[in-house]
Length: 341
Image (cartoon, rainbow, N blue to C red; front, side, top):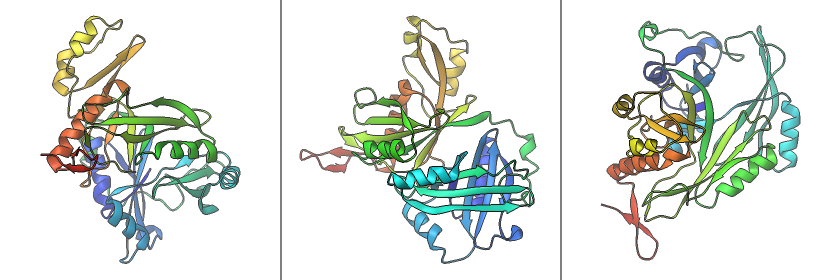
């Protein structure tokens, strides 16, 4: 996943220091890249790339940063046949931003192509033309500096990206999910509506689409009308398979619900409550869940790991933060939003 930022090295350092990532690959002036610098960090199967401009007047990054601030630009998929997928996507109405091209170095060759998805977000299709023996991708080399502090920090415990969410304006969820099913040959995996996920003030509809093997999951969300309105953007949200971290809120009636549940939580409930770790469960098992506050100045991107049972807890936490920022508004009698204080 690639994010545009005006401070790529600092963004990479944040994820390494705070989230347990490793800065493992770099592309910049020293590697022959004269326009952009890229810092790649990884943890197990997760790879994030932070891209910044090297020269003034870079319109590609400049316009995106002005409009969105630091944020996700591209979500890449590894594919087996890039040419076929691009041909099919184009025939079905997708906007192909860049036709397939090949990059290579002494370690091997990689084919790429780029398609436009919702908003300003793109998908890069990556096909390895045989085994690639380099660090990451052609053009990347080892970072110029490795922080000696990182090996002394505890492991982050993140394993892989479970899903990446695309939040849409109202009434855009269905067209976007249809685009994935039509142009990328995904299928519907799961869906929920505002009767299932809501608070007194906010509600959510979601359609999850996935590829044929069901290894890629893309929840497409939209808000539903409520007593108040909050700010939704087209910025991606990430769901991780993870070891427990700390969220900003906890589940309230957990102990009461577990008294009649068919499952038994093995972890110490006092410890879970102390760390504010959510528990979502049904008759087949349970899941420990966490989510962070926004990880950048514009509050449009956070990291999460949870299921439908705790969406309400997430919404309540978001509403609390938005109220503090003055972004939570009430609906007036004519249905128009007004500041809520």
